[in-house]
Image (cartoon, rainbow, N blue to C red):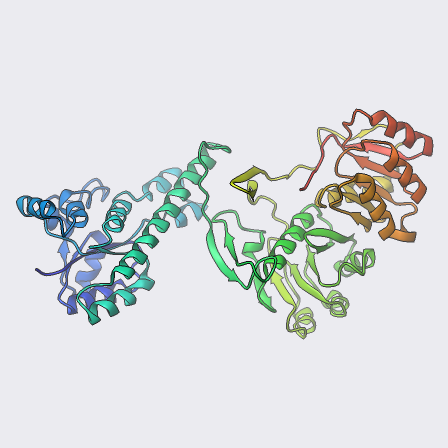
Length: 511
């Protein structure tokens, strides 16, 4: 009996060549709609699906392959005598290869002009049904979703009568990966449309960007995946224009720098190490901002990440070139800047035009043993209002620095402290198990620059000891969430030392 292949594809890449090879090997081609028309135009013999089903394609093509002559021909078990008898009785002939890729649902939801009705029309029904049927019966049916697999199948058919069981199983696995991804996109679309943030079951889908050399350590494998939508302004949308491939740690650290950078509108440089800000500077020009960020901590920036919200010009590049940096990410680089920076062959340069875009992923997640934690992105900055809780109000310059420090500490690991002066960090104390230790580390880092600075704490002070340490170091104003049962102790200590203190009404733990 002549072998038969059912081919119905939206993506027609190389499908004509594949069908021509099958025909040359003596296969019969069955096809639908536009695929069938393309084969006929290319002179490839083809049976229309309606000739197989004895039923016309109908409802604007919504129904064409959902028929026993199709699904039965795919699903029948070829070494089952009962199945073979039923096929003969019903006049169903086997289908030995299914080639199908689906309506472009992803491309449709990515199109800002697409409305709801168009999106719904691009939910494929018959395609996934055929694919799942063929994949379920993979011992007898070869199923192809990816044009890259055409040559593999043809090569095996040329060397034997059929594809190997190993290849069939590989192709079937790709089907279920493909349909799971497709269905996850659809459920994600409806969850977003209906504002469902905590569905009963959570199915996420991401697309592989690259395999990485290793993870946090050389003995750990790692891969970088991208979400499908809302990637503008994120690291997944960055274009690497120079340097080595990004490592797992590069990606995590650069992402941390980007999150911090998005808090600032004026020309700002964020230097980061281990995803924590180690030096931040804002100024009228980006070269001045970089100099501030460097001076804030010239030790930790070594081997660090730099994120800029303005084009890197020649003046800035010349300062940067004298320092060992792993990654520089910016909206653009001037031609002169590139001439300077590309002289360092390993330095990774990332161009991210929409670097300030903040409307990206709606959630933050992380794995735990046996589970997955998910939460909304922390896109807020303060509560309902800022409240001055001390007798002295901060001056205008102190207020500017307080907000600068507050934006910084929001992105430092908890317990986090940030000290700032003149829109420059003087010291950052991230990730300590004690708040007073975080403060002491930040003060020690700032040394003689601390006098006249301001302090931000990501969560409330449980005791007055941080206020006392701040006063001893010469800090003049404090911003913190408030909300401790001992707030009164901290307020009294601040009044005693003439320190202005503001409550934000919102904490920013980052664990």
